[in-house]
Image 1 (cartoon, rainbow, N blue to C red):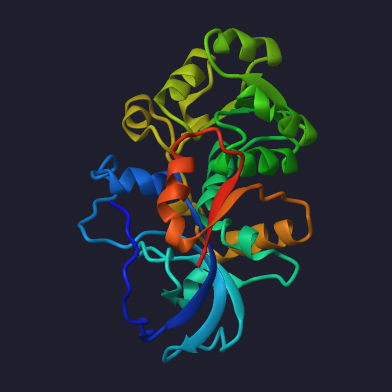
Image 2 (cartoon, helix red, strand yellow):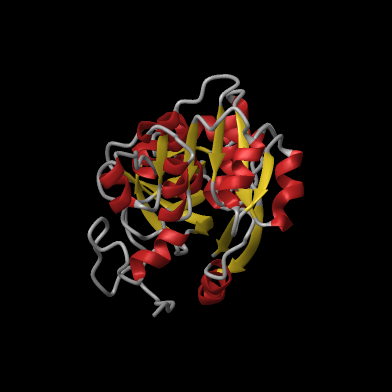
Length: 292
């Protein structure tokens, strides 16, 4: 069960900095890890902290750190499930400078969803003019993926609820409603076939990609790991995409307005349970963000 605990402010070790967190988004994977649904891939023990995404201000610098100084505004990630907090220690190599024009909410939402989308797009490797379908196309990862695909001049089919079709159309994406008859609707939207598929929702979409004739090596799923292993699809996500180079590029795209970072809602840290309750209802467009 989620609860807020009062702990001493951590101190950075060698190569680390202490960040006062200004924003940290939440992600479906965090709820799945907490429930033990991803134990084989990401085991955990309890009690445990939570949170990967973060953006904030450096308050203390550990020994050996020359990249950052007190007062620097940064964004990045923690592999220690610790960013849903007021303060977090982070290795300096997992942070990049936050552009001044980038809002705290957007900066604190970039890592998990942005790096996952970045890696997934690289994995399916779209060529200009090719068609790539994306499931849950208006969600946290999907909303990044469709935009990154359009930057590569791909034709994009976005599978999403009808409530999100206008947003997809505004971003140059052909929307298709999920549900019964989905395969026929995708085929109608892509009469020349689908070249790549990014699944951000579940195994039924990997099965759909196979049914559509997409080559397994051009399918990337960030959820259906067992099925991916069976059919030979890829599972490249945030672990692959979490690099300073990728995060810097995403931050610059967002700061200049080329990449929209949809914010579905913000919650104070003490309402973290409410934040996850909204997230787990599904159908959110973009990110839900905690503000410590």
